[in-house]
Length: 249
Ligand SMILES: [Zn+2]
Image (tube, rainbow, N blue to C red; front, side):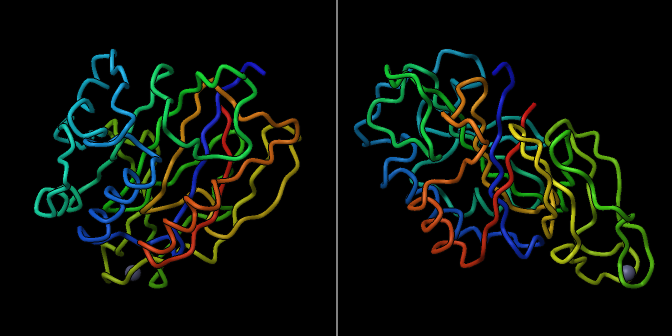
């Protein structure tokens, strides 16, 4: 396999956005349950060598926004999170290859390499508007997305944060919340190329994204899922459903 893999865990309804309190609870729970490194946890031997990843040194994560990159706060400060949530934000917990000791792998199956020198990045994407992700594996919706009033809601985003087109979360004309949760998009398994139709497709306001890079879960049929306990954690804290999409790049 010579491709790279990303696993999208998308909140449904797709217009869902977390509160600062939920975000704070999520950050604490990820560290408490050893899904990520955090101050006081046993996995503090992570070496954040790369320049950008160095921003995760103090708290285990950093926040990317249009304004740039800022180290995460730990314990998380709700006022800081509330400011991040006003616009687009990506919370990123990098796990470089040397740092897996003591952390749980977020997907099933785990990678094949017995040395367990695995690496991945965990990201929580929160968009003020929808991120309208599509790729070779994830088609856009068949039709142009419109509000019930007839206004087209897609727009271009040059912020270099998500690298995808966007859909307004609230119609710019009538201010109704745009709901794409019932629209279906064709998605393809990156290993078998089997296709299926998924409600909501790759359009999301909130998604947990596991970026595996080339350190692929050990699968021959592309069946990869979020660890059930991590899934439960997401459902409990955010109080919504999640569905999963695999993406190769
Ligand atoms: Zn409208």
